[in-house]
Figure 1 (cartoon, helix red, strand yellow):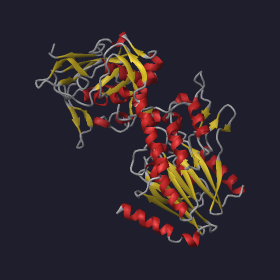
Figure 2 (cartoon, rainbow, N blue to C red; figure 1 turned 90 degrees about the vertical axis):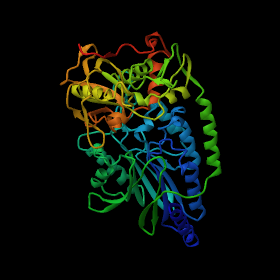
Figure 3 (cartoon, rainbow, N blue to C red; figure 1 turned 180 degrees about the horizontal axis):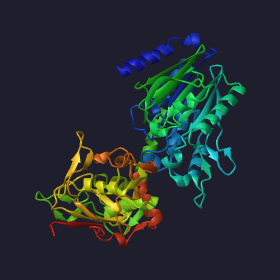
Figure 4 (spheres, one colour; figure 1 turned 60 degrees about the horizontal axis):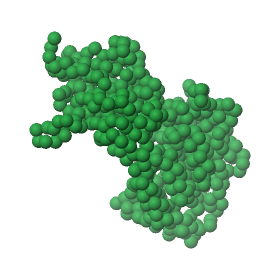
Length: 542
């Protein structure tokens, strides 16, 4: 039915081509958001390009727009610092884009190189160089289509400072030199958007479209896209991103006038389309269709071939075997015993150290179920690192109490001596697990952590060599799967204050730690296969 709907839609657009071809007052805006390297999905850039060219062949004037977070999210982005995605966007024919928070993940110099590489302009009215208090990028750009002048005003979430790597916005001494007009009530962002809209009108724009990487989640307030519209006038439509939502609705502006508000989801699950015709603005989400642009498809195939070669590139070295399975024992059926889900291993120490040391947090946690492969002594290539962390979880840092840390440890050891994907590999702390005590953790109807009803199995926790203070606030580094999403039932951190939010892919965390903090080689400090004694198992009551 989706394909039938899409085909009918294309036919409807094609049938009146004789009447509308070249007619003044008609334009089509196609848009994407939060593609996150989704080049393998059903639509893909090759399909998007074919769809756009089909509209143009039918006499429509098309403008192609992206609302941010295109260059990060998979190995194709990580291994090229986003360059492959810009090449694909160039080939697809994008006309304008807004930087999302993850456009900055590879550092400011790389971001600037990506902007220079793009055949289309990036715009953002609130991305500011704090040294000069001037905008880094143009606030808007005007494109002509169907005889109309259409302005596209850009906004980037002020949360970019914590949802990308903070270092991207700092100088060498740790001073912030870039910002996004972050304030308490959102008024600075509202004013920047209003000023840009008015300037575009004064330059002759017939329509003004806000292209925002802001999102609609409550945690993004006071800078949600709908809040910006509610506090401004002069925008005819809003193209949004950041929250990965599927949205097609009307929101009211400051004067109470309805403004079309759209967002497509993520990874090209939909293509957004805004049609301007005879003064009316309509929106649609296209979820499926046929057709592939062979030139873009050939580029995708070429990039995948290069990516396969890059996966074999050496990125680090290890002097020792790094294990998730026990190399010295088998189970009763002769299969390797997976230690990472119920014991400390040197691979677990390495991965958790990477999270803690890269962020400067007090404690690092990585669930054993997210560490999936051994690495033998010798050179380490990209493919091996991605095999260790294949899920694309994102490094996240929160403030948490000692009680929440204790609860996390207790929830993670509840299945011992059995395996559990949520068993935590740890950094920055040591603890005892008294396995003779039956687990008394409680779970809710969905299997999520709901408290501890009896005696804790976890005892004598030391953080940085000092006893854990249940009332003290610590910084905890892990990934968004556990901290934000409650993965493996870990609910204790979901309401914590976020200090860094989804700033780097887990496999990139490991690569960066080995490269920048271990001088490119894992050495003798990780030689003990069964870890550094961060966990002590007490099997009998004293």
